[in-house]
Amino acid sequence: MGDHKEQPLRVGAAVRRRRRALELTLAVVAERSGLSVPFLSQVENERARPSRSSLERVADALGTTAVELLAAADPACSVDVVRADSGAEFTPEAHMRPLVRGHHQLHATEFTGDHEEGRELQHRNDKLMYVADGAVEVEAEGRAHRLGRGDTLYLTGGVRHRWRATVPDTRVVVVEVADHIEAVEDRQTFGKR
Image 1 (cartoon, rainbow, N blue to C red):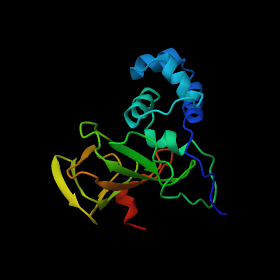
Image 2 (cartoon, rainbow, N blue to C red; image 1 turned 135 degrees about the vertical axis):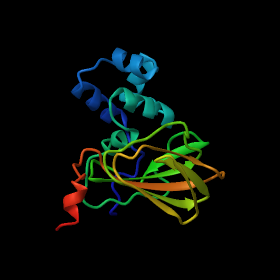
Image 3 (cartoon, one colour; image 1 turned 135 degrees about the horizontal axis):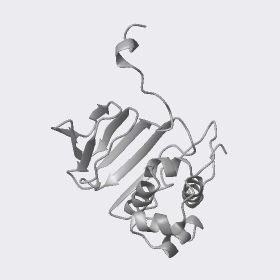
Image 4 (cartoon, rainbow, N blue to C red; image 1 turned 45 degrees about the horizontal axis):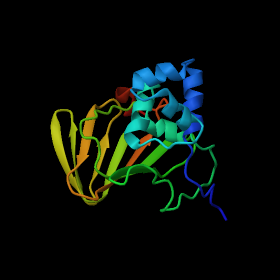
């Protein structure tokens, strides 16, 4: 009782909604992502689950992020329990698990294992990274930051960054304000309140 849908997230409908909202065909998304039309069709119809890297490629092709697609995969609810054994549905070597389901103002994701260190990220709003286990290296604003278990890193919206696990079985929790939220304020007027 109190649990919201004890099943894995179904991202296909979110992919289809986003693609249709942009008035794109499967062929266009396939060309942009480098994935096949049949595979994308299977994803949209929940007959295939994309790997993390495939979901990121689809998200890039749709002008969004994998986190946004996962957030849109479930309807919003006011109270939701996400069990520890739910949602880890990508590759065995590296996976991510949404800690918040639905289309909310706040996103939280747990990453376990390796992370694509070459992938540069930039989010509209602020982001917090917490190392639950292991260690990571984050490159941001031309500096490398080494984080160990229990360390956090706060990134202001708009900062380009990349990160990678430096220890096997690393777990990182990332909490960020959703991209659809206009959370960025004029920082000069913020302190004058």
